[in-house]
Length: 138
Image 1 (cartoon, rainbow, N blue to C red):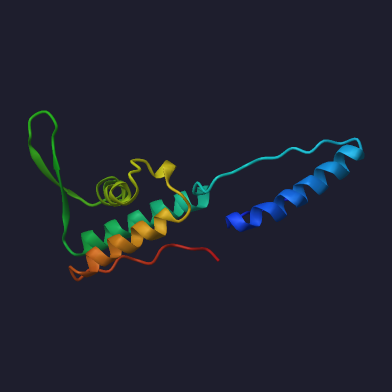
Image 2: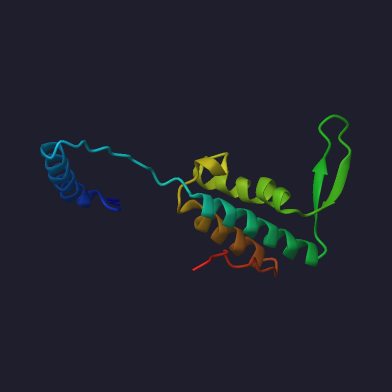
């Protein structure tokens, strides 16, 4: 049985359900194991993030834009074609950190990706670019 709680007002009802299930199973000689999961984003969302970053990088390449990277030891600047990894590290994570204080996508919640993508899309649209829609398999 999977029970999802979305609002704090649902907790009492859920606890009553858990109590009833636990009582029934223990009385039947079984035991009840609970797992609590937080709102970390899923493997599917992680995959969608990587696909979206690849698609955003393609938009930037299509518009002739490059990513300027400075070598840490000799300060040589390189103009690199955008890749999904460069986009994720230099754009997505920058916005994620500014919005949430999180430095890793592994720490983001299930709602952070859409919020971050909305901010990035708004900024890019101000420059005449359109980020692709978030990938989804429905």
